[in-house]
Amino acid sequence: MQELNRNRLSKTPFELTQTLGEASKGDSRHPQLPTSYQILAHLLHEPSVSDAQNAEPIGERQYAGVYLSDGWNGRKGEMLRERLVAGGRRFLEKE
Image (cartoon, rainbow, N blue to C red; front, side, top):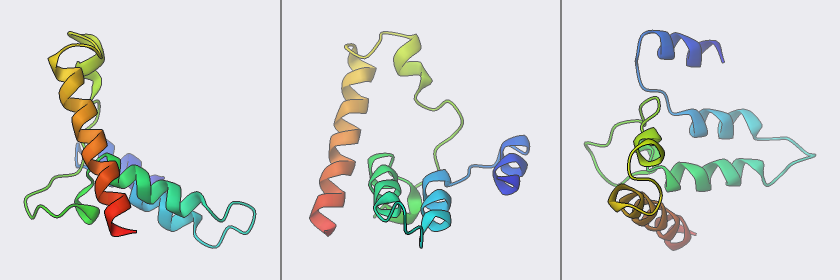
């Protein structure tokens, strides 16, 4: 969490789901948690799971515009839903 805060304060992107997934490995009470974080990383297209070489980590409040502008049912919402579906499909194809 200290690394997350340092990156946040310096406005440097941080792969949160990958870090949380690594931290949760070996948890005998919640063995599926690392897989859940891996799915989330695919949904969000984090660079470590992305096929794109120019991928960038998700910025703070990157998806806020969808909810603050035309909403979930507008064009931005449609684009976000398509992105989430594509990420989920990529995860399932790798499994």
